[in-house]
Length: 65
Image (cartoon, rainbow, N blue to C red; front, side, top):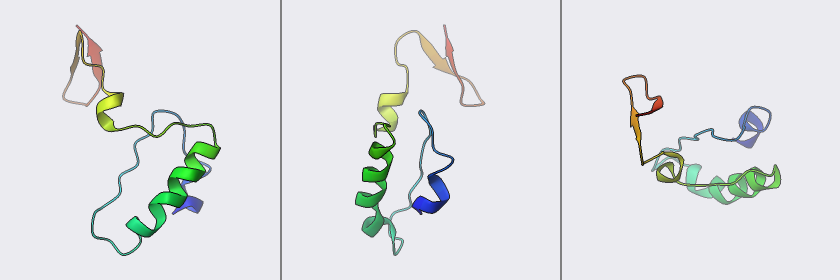
């Protein structure tokens, strides 16, 4: 998994991992460590969404009200 991400990942990216797949749980710790080693922070989706004075349009873009 990391080999597919390491040259593409940047701040603000969202990584989707599916529950119940064979390797997701086994690779999560490694992915998080590698992401942090690139100087990036791992946060929840809720942390990425602007809440006050913003709305999300039909394209998923956050727009200031």
